[in-house]
Image (cartoon, rainbow, N blue to C red; front, side):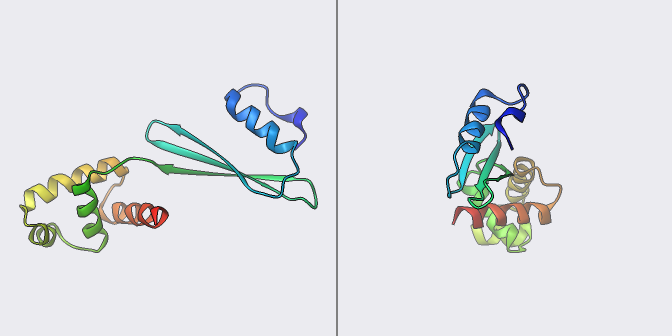
Length: 129
């Protein structure tokens, strides 16, 4: 993309500056710009093609919400398919306490149900390792 067609408005100055640098540099390495907005993180990857001189931009959005130590424990067991009763027995706490933690986890992850929460937790867990 020629520098002249970069939009003049709508992008933060930091992004415009980063894009100009990436597009004017025929580097062979991938560059990443990470921007945090509230609990969301947006990563912009600039992947150059040294043969054609073109660049491809990829966006990846992810949730950067932090779970407490206990919420992480419970989310792990939820992702393993355990029921609230089974988790309560494993952690030696009440089922009501597990239920409260699961509700908080669902809210923090923006998940509608346990399956969605387990999937989101697994994705974050794999990304962290």
